[in-house]
Amino acid sequence: SIMPAFEDSDLNVEAQPAQQQRTNSQAVGSSYGGSLPVPGMEPGTDRSVEVPATRSSIADPSPFMHQLSLSPSMKDRRGSRNSFGASLPIPRSKRQSRLSSVHYPDAKSGRPGMPPIQPTREILASQIQDLSSEKVKAAKNMAFAFDIDGVLVHGDRLIPEGKRALEILNGDNELGIKIPHIFLTNGSGKREVPRCEQLSKILGNPVAVDQFIQSHTPMRALSEYYSTVLVVGGEGYKCREVAEEYGFKDIVVPNDIIAWDPTIAPFRVFTDEERATSRPRDFSKINIDAIMVFSDSRDYATDMQIIVDLLKSENGRF
Image 1 (cartoon, rainbow, N blue to C red):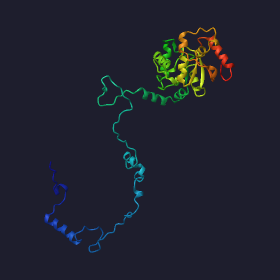
Image 2: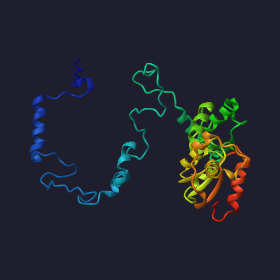
Image 3: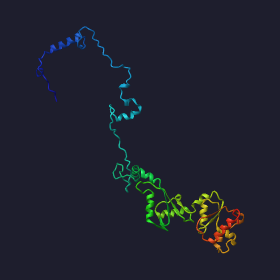
Image 4: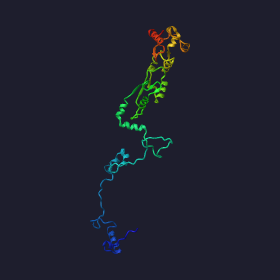
């Protein structure tokens, strides 16, 4: 497009010949040496004009700078403010949400190219814990001790309410936290590891060895204090095996003593199999340092006789 041209007559101005306009401009330039005239100045005078400086060229510029430019520690924040110090929104790149992963059977996300949006149980639990700090504090000060038979199981049969109680303590609760708990039983005569494996299978919840306490479990700590010990109770030689696992070095059971001297229990019927599996020796030359009842006795008369004889002996010798 072409801009419209205006004539002098359109502006009510009297037109001048072009030659006269050039003469006037040359006259002005020649009278002032080719420079523009300063208003109020006579021709022929010194045309130098001094403009006073507002500040020195070497003056300190700090007072004229924005405060955000003065502090090195605020360099990273300059992009978030304008020249007046007002806060501005900071554009941020997209990042993966804290909402966690969900694994689909086909190993693909429900939204290709986007992070999964369903939160994990751990994140939800942490958010609830933040909102329920008092509950969390109270829960972390709790612990439970369970009997086993009649509470969690009947023999080898699970009590459903017992299973649910353990699930809650293992973290399936509104706070998503695990609550300490142990298992106490007066059962005995077996090693802890197979008992825990059996109990875990029945309950459907893990039972660690350090959570499981039988009647003889505390005796494990005594293995470093006693050398030769008499272990009483249990079926066959199972309690001897338990004591060996606890770390006792020299373990004596009643059958060992009867095989050495049958007169100690004259009414005891000692079978050939029991005699073959026993470990007889001359107990008149051995000091028995401690008597430990690991489990219920299977022959009270014999066991009580041996215990009484040892208690009345000198230094644990027959």
